[in-house]
Image 1 (cartoon, rainbow, N blue to C red):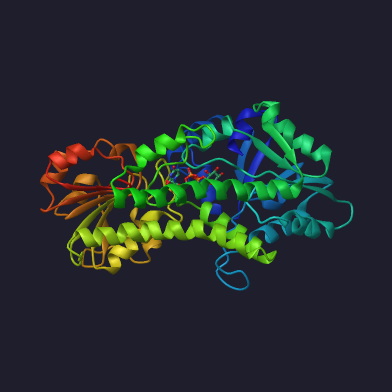
Image 2 (spheres, protein in one colour):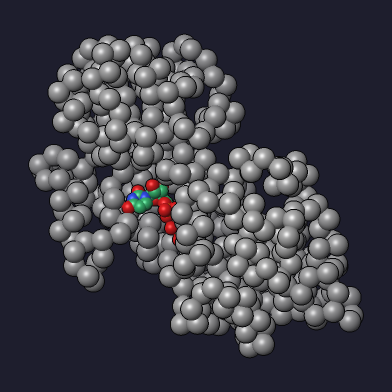
Length: 438
Ligand code: UGA
């Protein structure tokens, strides 16, 4: 919404949320404390806020005065009831749609921005259909393809914008907004269901590439090949392409797992058992990769990490974000804590409160406990191993001579992102494991 406001100064954009503390943070004069860390976002908000971008808790008022409402709420995986563990929980979509039905005035275009199961627009339409007389609605699907960490550039020059809808006038109205900065041939129009399904499919394909390359990484480690050489060799085939072939600790983030599980549920619902199993395997391989790394660490440290200090560098699910949702670091850290390790965790953007919440236990300094280290050197002090889990730029040029000097020998570097200078680490006396290197 901030980018739309930035690119279309004549359109008034109001972002509303019930959470007053969050809205206050978005309105904070200090742009360095915005609730989301995203490179370039502060500048965009700084330019548009107060001009044509507003943050408010007046949900009903903003809906009443809007020509177009974007529904951008959470759709987490259900934890109970039918479809638990797979289907999306649509309760916020429903609450929100009911609010739109109640507060809207005249004709309103309702845009699904949240990622939703196929045919959710039908539910949205059904709720809007019983709104008090005198109001009309048109429902569009406009899934978001930005990735965290590169959100602003992804939005400013998207590969494509997808608009699904059956009412051509409304589709044109939304296309005209993007048309302020996106070339016309990058604005794709489809029917509602194709748009909803394309979003799930794009994420399923991307995640599938990661599970595919991670499966090959394990083969490389077993046979003496190097997954980066294999990735480069296959990526130069223009039919395959070079992106999303980086082996690592598995994919995290709020989307890939949730969306695939959603697809799996959908396939099951339509009796497509083989298709459901096919996609389910992408998620299973991802969990296996994380478990494999945790177990490998234990095995290399003489089959016990009980009471041993392990430095964990990186907790966010990828670099350039403070988001830890479904981060591979969570599962790996939990396994190591279960084995009795003492974890010293350092992430440039993730703090103690978030880690506490993710690991389900407060910080502490004993066996099976974790604490935060302010920098990599402090994390490594007295550690038997250092494990790199997020590809933060600052971890690429760590001074291994300095870090190795404060570790307990024999010491290990486990580089799950293969970003550190392995030769320098070896020269400093560390034993080194890199993902996908035999
Ligand atoms: C993903 C998609 O890339 C976006 O297009 C989509 O809009 C978004 O989900 C969404 O549905 O909202 P995001 O989860 O923010 O974006 O981040 P990605 O860059 O896709 O990374 C996801 C995970 O895959 C990270 O843990 C990352 O480290 C991992 N990854 C990515 C790899 O392990 N290897 C790669 O080669 C690429």
